[in-house]
Amino acid sequence: MMTNLFSVFDPAASLSLSLNWASLFLMMLLVIPMFWLIPNKSSILIETATKKLHQEFKTLLGESAFQGSTLVFISLFILIVINNFMGLFPYIFTASSHLSMTLTLALPLWMTFMLFGWIKNTNYMFAHLVPQSTPGALMPFMVLIESISNVIRPITLSVRLMANMVAGHLLMTLLGNQTAIASNIILITLLMTQILLLTLESAVAIIQSYVFAVLTTLYSSEITSH
Image (cartoon, rainbow, N blue to C red):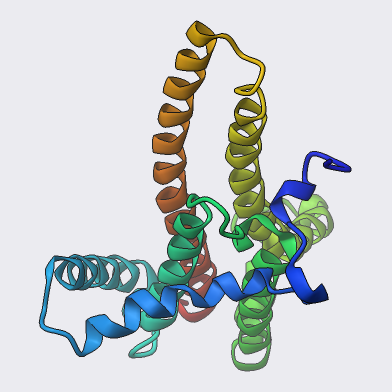
């Protein structure tokens, strides 16, 4: 019996080993063969999506971005979207619904951007704390507000992804638990609702991965473009 509503997202593993996080590596079984097998529809789809993402991230980063920097954000997008989709399959652990994973992705990237900005572009980072045309009396408050907004960026990134993954999975779990006691008419309604929710979660899996990667790209462009 569940001790709380969120325990379903962290099921107990056998042999007293925490094997749930091994689901992160399931994507390697699908991605790696695409690099050496004869090109198929899946590999063509991934290649097309990668090229589109490269063009968009390159536009967001601007001309001053380092060559090959889009590879980091494309890899981030692919990692998140595959793990989000893996969580939609039965009996597969949804790693992206845990703050320990999402914060692990967001915090090192944010810390890297901040260290690079304050070491290489110190004057620009100080100037970025006070927007243009700010009255002198409001400058101390603007510095405080901008500093807080920069500090909470990794938290908002990780919590946004985690909350969206948890919300849909929790709703599907709650509806699925009602099928055992539901009548035939209600059962059909629940099944139709579950199908619609599964379709919605598939879209959310892509959208949240895209939002995470785009916001990370924008945070990077603020540091490098000046």
